[in-house]
Length: 170
Image 1 (cartoon, helix red, strand yellow):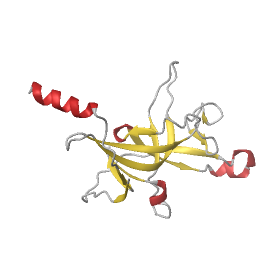
Image 2 (tube, helix red, strand yellow):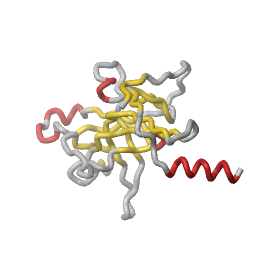
Image 3 (tube, one colour):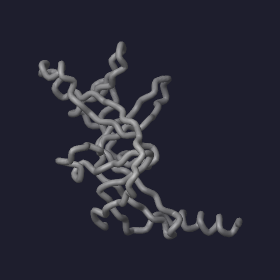
């Protein structure tokens, strides 16, 4: 058994293969995720995500974004496969997110992009699906037109066999 572990670690140390696969959709944690491009025009909007996070302070910070790509990396072995989501992240500072103290409703500024554009990938297992909606009373106020309310969704059981559709091969 020790030899198998050494071989697996050796294969991982080589890094991923140069060839990756990209998908339009992916099923994980009870959610079906679509890339934003693939989901455009569909009845359900499945490209929005929340990642639970924390900072060095005592406050927890959740991160919100829109799915751009689903990427499959393989590490020189059939057993060593990793799926990643590439996201367009929204700013989580005071200018990009706020929480109503009375109701706990989270709002994000859809025009405020996260500045660290080098940190765009997450493991698929970290994701929780949410959706964004305009709060009807905010449409009257032009200063708040870019703000979206975040609503969390519950995972669903998918009865049909889910098949990933390959988008491109790079």
